[in-house]
Length: 468
Image 1 (tube, rainbow, N blue to C red):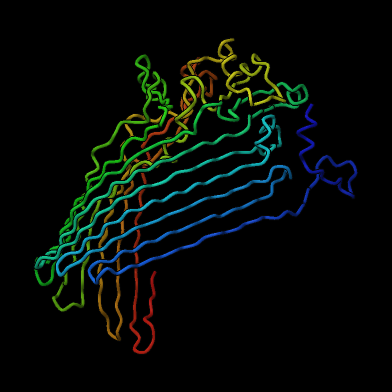
Image 2 (image 1 turned 45 degrees about the vertical axis):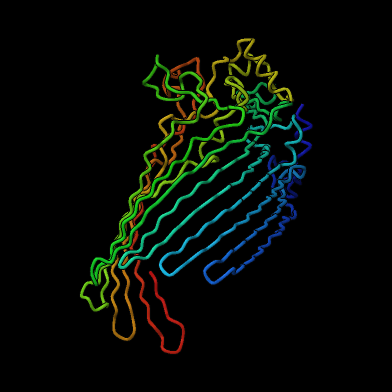
């Protein structure tokens, strides 16, 4: 029964010195093909010394074919990137204005050849058929930015803003997964676990398309308070909107009122990823102080908050599906697998019909977990950054710079699996509900670093640096 699958594997030779060996090694050579096709085109036009237009176009068409253990399953990766940027700079004696408009398109594709066969499984029993995958990550950015700098006496004032639209098309599928836990199960073709998997989008279903926006503005004032002290004060505010999907195929789960202690992922279906965050006010402060007024010892310090929105591929790639009870994949335990009667071979082209039939027969529930739940309280991630440093001139045309840098990352993504069976009893908190994959912002990070840099100015050669 497994002959079609085994026929895909290369035949390993029997060891010459051990004709009864049950294991052997296989060595083979195959070609890795990589090709780049990149170009950069540039145009600078001077309307006048105070009006300059700069245009940049970047084109990228990388391609790769990599071999696999199964000769019939090579991997193809091909990208398609185009970026065009228009920047206009207008300046006068006291101020400079910079206007930028850009379009950036990136399409990334990965295709394993055997995924075209809907009967090819990711089979595991002491060995693995390695499976395959199809990825389509397509998207583009439309960006408009405005920045103005104005010099007035001892002050340099800067302000501006950004409006950016992020559009992402995302689709990924993998083959069915079949697991055998014992030799008897493998010989009798009675799997202990079977994951049915979507193979292709049903007719009339467009690719999943998301839109999100960034709207931000900032103000900064650099003030020379005294001959020896300069202070930088700034404030930025950004809004990163919650992604939407063109057909509202968003299926998340909140908190179950009957079991609030379990947290998100167990409640009713909600058609949103998470709640918007309007709290990203980002102050910045910096200073430079000429300690003795002679320019030989300078102290520098600064603090700032920097925010960023959740990227589409970071947060929402697994939270959409075909319907509230139609995820891209469903993994059955041993009892469900036996009741379903599914075994190798199985044709994944009938995934939607098969899953609907299993629900109608009561083998699996129609009230199933979503592919990946996201906590509704999902504020934007940000980092708190600070530094303190000193620069000291030394004899023999040398300068020593010592800087301490610290960074504290907050509201970073954290993934966990809930509703797992108790190790002692084998019973899950909600036995009639499956495992829940949940994404929260409960992770955080720390960084601290000390940088020492010794520079010497050479009289007739290039300067020498000695960073540590």
